[in-house]
Length: 61
Image (cartoon, rainbow, N blue to C red; front, side, top):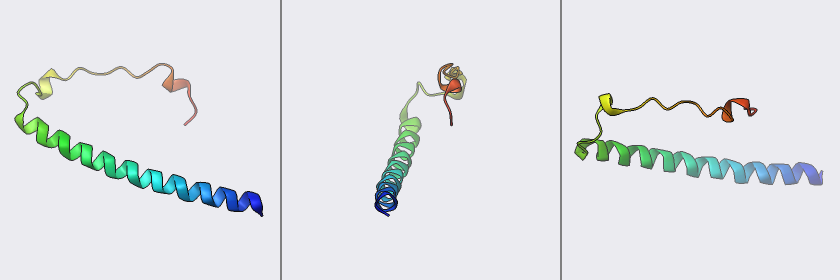
């Protein structure tokens, strides 16, 4: 029972963290959109394809 309660608390903490990170992602996405409107350096033709990290592809998902 103690383990269950501990896992429930951890789950709650992680869910809060996920919510905060989603909000931060939304905020940063909006900031990027605003920046793109003003930045002459950001042009779709200037973007370089980023190669996937070879280590990340070996990690479990």
